[in-house]
Length: 265
Image: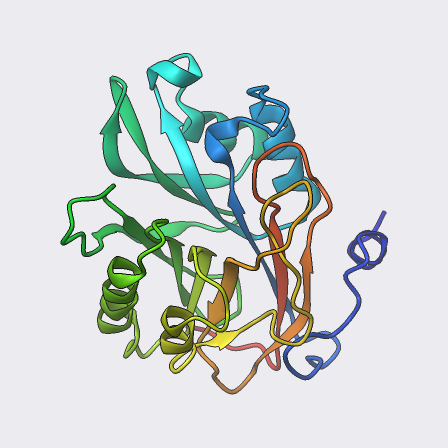
């Protein structure tokens, strides 16, 4: 099956949040997935079905939240290594906290080399669970390089920490010369003051076809996003929440961008 047939089979042909990129201009497929440390809503720990969602999406880059590395609750498995093995993608893990003898955090997976990987500790003035962003410079062959940022913000009802965390993201990534793509679990909804603040700088790739992502079985809340710097030559070709409803407590969000013309970094 060729790429066009594969995408059509996934139902990803609709345009969302922007104009259709010129035919042949190239594309970038982004996936964000909160994996709930590999445990599905059925209580089963199964990294294989998580990886199947990633590979089945055809994603070029993936922001993965809630990854365990050799923790007690998930059998001392290095989940970051397993996701690299199962998907065949390059990957980097960033630790948010020490947990049950191991580490818990996020990772970036990429079809292309990952450069300048970094972990960014986000504000945590109330001493809650430490949150981070992970970032990397990605260079698709023959296309502009971009900064890819994985995000997982505070989950408490009070949004004061999330507000400060978005301010930190804006301070770190809001003025970069290269395009920025932020993908992850923001733990807030589009109309919230937190997301309105983020959307003052970045565009919501799913704005044209918004779908809820959480909880996985019957989603009614949109808290997972792909945001991007609105720059000439980039457009959103499609946005879709994937139908897998068991592997994690979130559904995965897939966005395809188009590049208007080929150019180097």
